[in-house]
Image (cartoon, rainbow, N blue to C red; front, top):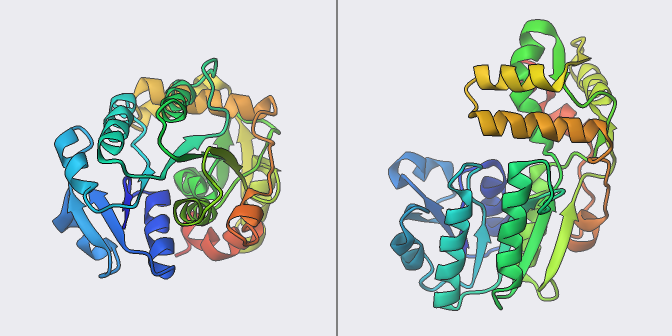
Length: 287
């Protein structure tokens, strides 16, 4: 039985599907079981709990053979990850596979990068069998730009011409499933990317070809991006992190491309072209 935290998010949802397809028993850790029951395959066990209530984490681990650790991007993340790890150590459940971020480091300009590195270090020092997945920017994040695409025919970023090894979350899920169910991934830190690095200008062109809608990439200053994200409702620290992330892309810090999906998941990683053919209409508001 694999316990999946963050089970209703983009990666968690796809991981649950991947594990079910592999015939693996899955337990989804959620806050409101009734609200999400239809979200999952009937074979998935739903466990209602709260990462801020450690006793529910401990109960969810009963009978588990592995844990996928994914906590929401919030100021509670460090405490929540500590709570899960403490419960895992107490229960003796392993392996634990943690979703981290590309560039996780104590000196990261991103608060999330520093938090994720702290979580990684806790795993490394725990004695529990673990695998860390440092994921590149998701292709699915393009959905977050659908508003400006629909209204202005534009993608606004502070990434300038910087390239990013965008990855489909389904490929991250496939790597996670392999790490949770197969031998040989203990103690590994995998950087999970798509098959190529592309700029947002190139992404706009890909979406344009896939949908027939003219879309352009417009560069904006970091400060303007951070302000617009706050106006859209993001907390100040998170808006600043996202703006800093794109500034890092402009400086070349997102260009990494690896063969992890091919080597670990034993599948070809999805290209942005293929993703756009499948999801482009929905992203640009045609579906």
